[in-house]
Length: 322
Ligand code: DPM
Figure (tube, rainbow, N blue to C red):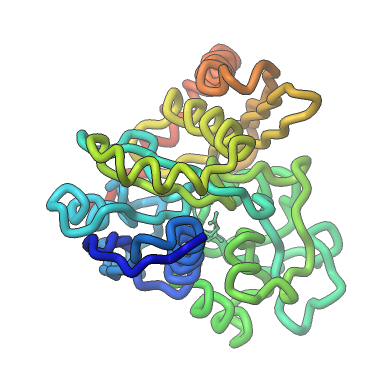
């Protein structure tokens, strides 16, 4: 590739300021720069609402797009040209004028157990009754309560570094976190156990990055499309269609698992009650080119199996505080 000095304006990439967000955005910036040497890419950081609300349990904050709204507004005001998100934090409905332009290759989407020093060598199975596990994810909470009713669970907020510091200070015996975030920040060696699909289905989009851009900006879209991983995209589009058909305004215990095997996309989806007593789970398989149809249709199957009642109960109990 020949890099001729650019006379065109730099392309501006919006990012949150957290360490994880910056690592992810700088990776996208480097990938874009490597592929499009004739352009220059700069990162513009901003604080989102979600970064400022660290004391309220995430599940109780009704607003969607907590970590994405400010980034989106800046694209609509033409102050930035694209935004990099953890795909799982990007709502399934995007504002008018914006689109999900590309989905990058997924890191391991699984959840992980990180244990305090005193418990190293234990697993969720062998930890003694009453051990305190930190998570603010209703999805993780419901599934773990179901499989490990002997454990206790406690809310935990803050970025990854803050959470690990709370663990090391003894506030928790263990934490459940995404493998992807831990690895990207260099904490992969703190993982005690990677949770299998039989224990925890992951969040929609977990481990992938979503790059958002203006719908009417084909130039930017074609630049970012070069970072798309088709397999991850098909899996995540199925997962997002599944969630879109089910969700209703706040975080809910919904988990997924997808694979592409022998050219077929297999999507497993789950809706759980908060106490972990009821789990509705099923699987659908089909052509990856019909990913969104598969996702929406699996959602309807789960509704028929009782997911609608579970979700209605949750929306009635987890009231937004703001
Ligand atoms: C969303 C959830 C969490 C984040 C809910 C869920 C976890 C909250 C918690 C939608 N966003 O997963 O059921 O555990 O208290 C988040 C993380 C990452 C992106 C951190 C994590 C990194 C992994 C990735 C927070 N958003 O899940 O440990 O890029 O997928």
